[in-house]
Structures are given as C-alpha cells and as structure tokens.
Amino acid sequence: MNRLLIFIASLSCAGFSAVNAEQYWIAYEGDDFPENEGWNRIYGDGQWPPEDEPDRWIEEGQLVIDTSRNDQLAEYYWLPLTDPGIGETFVAEWRVRSEILSGQRDNGVVFARDALPAHVGFHLQPDGLLVSTEGVIIPLDPTISHTYRFESSDMESYRLLIDGDVAHESHFETDTLLQSYTAWGAGTVGASSISHWDYYRYGVVPEPSALALLGLGGVAANHLKRRHFHGETHHENKKDRDHSASDRSTRGTVRAWAKRDCSVGQRAA
Image (cartoon, rainbow, N blue to C red; front, side, top):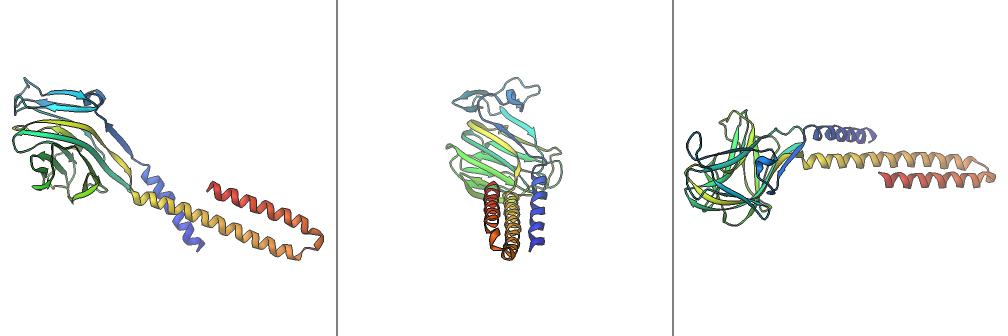
C-alpha cells in the first residue's frame, strides 16, 4: 500500500511540473483599442494599399467595429498561439454580439496552426454561428451577447461551449495556414456589420484532470503521514506497557506531545 501511495504522490509531482511548463493567459477586455495592448491590427477596404478603414470606438467597456459604410471594409486582430503540453488545455473565451447588415456572415474567430491538423473557424451570421471549416450552423441570435469558450487539449479535437453549455465538438481542419495564431474581428470582405466585443481571452491552462491529480497526491501524502504517525504511536504504546508504574507521568507527557504534533501536521497538510 505504501508503494502505491508513493507512486501516486510521484505522479502528482510530475504532473505539477508539466502543468507549469508553458502556461500563459492573454486577455483583451475592451478598455482600449487592441493594438494599444499589443495585438496586431489588420484592416482594409479591398484595395492595396488600403484607402479606407472601418469606424470603431470604445463604448462602455466594449470595442465596437462598424463596417456598415462599405461591405469591402474588414478589421481583425491577431497574436501567435502555442500548443498545450502534457496536462494542459488551450482555452479561448470571447463575448460578442453583432448585427449583420449585408453578406452571409461576419465577425468571427479563427485558431490556426503551422502543423496538421491545422485550423478551425467560427463566424456569426443572421441565423446563428457558422463553423466555417465544416459548414455546420449552430442556431442562435447574433444580436444578443453570447459567451463562447473553446477548449482543446491536443489541438486536434476541440469542444465549443456557448453560454456555459457544450454546443459543438469536432476536429481541426486538415489544411494548414502555415502559421500558428488566433484572430478575431470583422474580417470578412463582402459583408458589413456592427459588432460589440466585450472581451477576447486565450491561453494555456492546467487540465482539470491534472489539478485533480495534484489533489490526489496531497491526499496520498497526508495518508502516508497518518500511517507513519499511528505506527510510531503503536510502538510507543508497546514500550509504555513495559515501563513501571513510576514512569506513567512521563509516558503521559510523551503521548500528549505526539498527539499535539499530529494535529498540527494535519492542519498544515
């Protein structure tokens, strides 16, 4: 039993090392224009070099992107992403509402990798959220703010939650875009919309299973501590029975000290 508990504790230590290897979290909260917070901004009007750009402003903690003047206007932001390691999960969260004024779809999020399988994309359209790499439409009202959460532990399969419920589970597309990045915004040329972005956040975080393993390791270590203490107490009691009656007061002091030490150890654990 002791070997098993030591093995579990060892796994816990190994998991702790893994989940702390390459974790990061990048959050845009709608307080300023994204490029002022380190995001790469791409915009245009269908010409090169661009002669026009979308209207945009900050309103009550939201980034508003307005491409209603010209359906050739586009605006999006991107940053590199890193694949999760062992015991980690890639997570992205965003909250947005959009009024699609023309065109089939606009306002989306893309996750791309420089290796296969390579990418997946989601775009709002009048009747829902389009999984653009599959042609699947998830019904919803895009004019109402929804909270989206994307999760993948291997960057091959993923699940998408909308307002806390699992809405879609699938795999990355096989075509590579030759670069690892995530992008969001109104990037569709040929569509016009007004979108309100509350936030966009992404990063690599510990898997829930890895956190549970850490907790299991702590339980195992605490159990080992209790077994070790009880073994010492049993041995001490056997020795006590061999003492003369004149040593009883000393034995009582030893037991009281041992009991006090155990209770402190359990609280600390």
